[in-house]
Image (cartoon, one colour):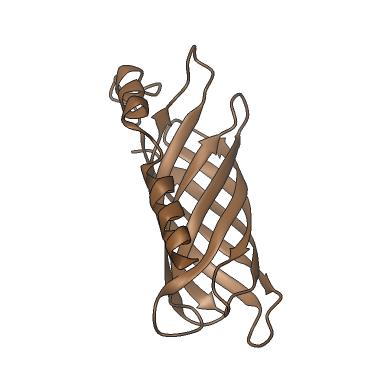
Length: 179
């Protein structure tokens, strides 16, 4: 099962095939060729929530997630279809102090401020050895204030991969920055 999660995480990071990368080079995002924002996206968010279905231990979740991603314009005819492979680093305070790495991907819903997210969570929570904890699935609403700054509100849930993990329910708020 862990091997399947690892394969899914690597596939999520490698999802933008060479053809999509070529499309991103051929049709850069608005402003990137004129010295405006790049396709690089940096973000940070604060999340709180719960872990349901645990047989023992604390169910609360609290974390700060920092992420870096790259927007790839995969649209044809200006439809606004964007794929963003990303890597997140979560610093958790609950259920205990922990660190998590989250390789994943986001996909923009064309003509809306909505994004769909999938990520694998590799964490040191509930033990000292890092282990795969969840496959996270979620949605985000991003309001771009300027071409450089945006604010996000997200909701995540997921599938537990470890027997020590419950079903996550996370709500997060944060900001994105396009340098």
